[in-house]
Length: 269
Ligand code: MG
Ligand code: MG
Image (cartoon, rainbow, N blue to C red; front, side, top):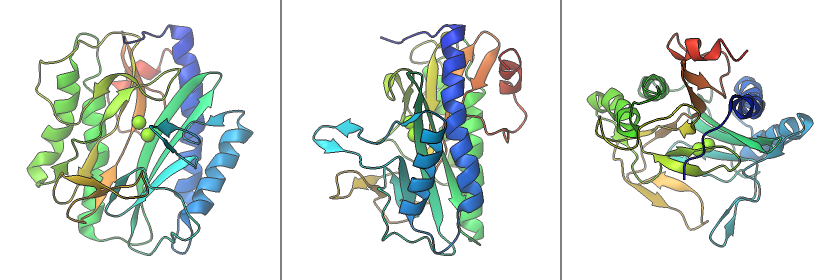
């Protein structure tokens, strides 16, 4: 069942989303070579709790596995779900994907960015920028009566011409009182297929795009997902609400390119 949120609930979702946005704004300024991923996680947890929210990922269960941290931090060939550690030190030239969730007043915000650590190669810069923009291509499809396939197709249509691999094993999702709700939001799809979007749906759209193959493998820690060929992967995610006016970016950091979401934002703030 796909839960439709009222305007009041969407406003709560936006507040939760803004806690995550604030975490990303802080970490964007702090990331540098020599830091451990645990340090980033501790900063994020402190900020989330100071806002009166809870770190949604901490204690999140999949089967028998319990996620131990507030952020998933995935470096270079790690796609998603990397576990922060004092032994993982960021190096000049790395890219680091930071995925965070916060629960405020019973509602969840979920958002990810991939950041450069110091100077990175031109190939990596392009991977990051194109993956980031593919997210907005998808968000631009988030109007009532469009279909999930339109959203999914927008991601792959944007990045495939560059020869990138689009991860299929993991995907976006509905978000609300729980981190993962229906529907699934893949990053590949066929336009005009799938469920029709409805005003009041809240979904997390999260392109995961690889320099090489789309294929992934899970590591033996039970969480970390890596590319099968060891080449780099980027991940960008926003939680959005579908409104009659268009998409509202709940986790916006205020740095979105111009687009229809600007319209969706105006009545809410
Ligand atoms: Mg996420
Ligand atoms: Mg997500």
